[in-house]
Length: 371
Image 1 (cartoon, rainbow, N blue to C red):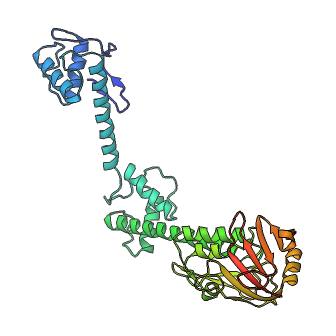
Image 2 (cartoon, rainbow, N blue to C red):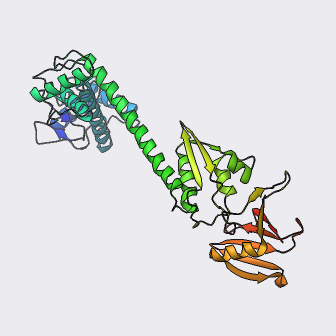
Image 3 (tube, rainbow, N blue to C red):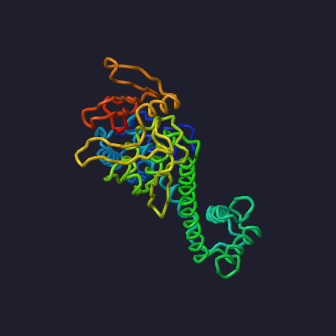
């Protein structure tokens, strides 16, 4: 009997195997027998396996060639051989998969003495839920029975050590809850780590803004606290606007926990500690107020600092000073960001400091200073 396995390997009583040698009407012998067996197994009736290439064999061969879209000539050569092997190996693979599937545990009764894939499935489920079954070997022994009893006791089932439909259903539900719990725990732990980074007094603005973006990617919705709306943008309602609005902070600026997150379900409120200075040049004792007009394209901040005090604070914070515009403009630079100070700005009639974020050619904030 000829057998073709899922890998296309042939087993046949005779050592003389047909490997595509040309066979046609009138051919006889072992090769023809193998062709006839292959056609029959493929579902194309070649009649009796007698080793004689007659009308039945030729008709079966033509039907096969037509069905597979290869040359329809009634002659069996290399192309026909390869196509037959592919067909029979595919059938063998499908049969093996079906056999494996039918052996899986789907609630059929298992007890001491049961063996096979279904027992392995049961043991694997118990192990995932934390019950000791010993080796996952497919043998339902005393240890597996004890684990089943322990599971049944925990979930209020009859403690008989026999795994049936009720045990199967309860086990699947337990595994589903465990998977949901694990996923939720991972998300919560990830959020907590990012929240700690935002609250850490040693975190830089670059680290804080990245953490906020990562939290947003996890699917949390942001609510912007009124304190930030007042300081930055009355219309702010997303974390992107907060990050853009606070872009005057250099990436390496340590913000000392100025931002606070308060999470409730999937909502995260972002709050700002007003007592903490967030603008280089303005000290904790300085008062600042958002005076942005309805038509203004940039944020306007008014402070009680004089221009020379603001300059001194910037120098103390490591900003490099230079003069431009014939001595009428003072420029401070640090980490790619710039402050451009003027004594008499046209827009305010007094001294101002325009802030340019790193790499930007446009300023995003105007600070109004005292003379």
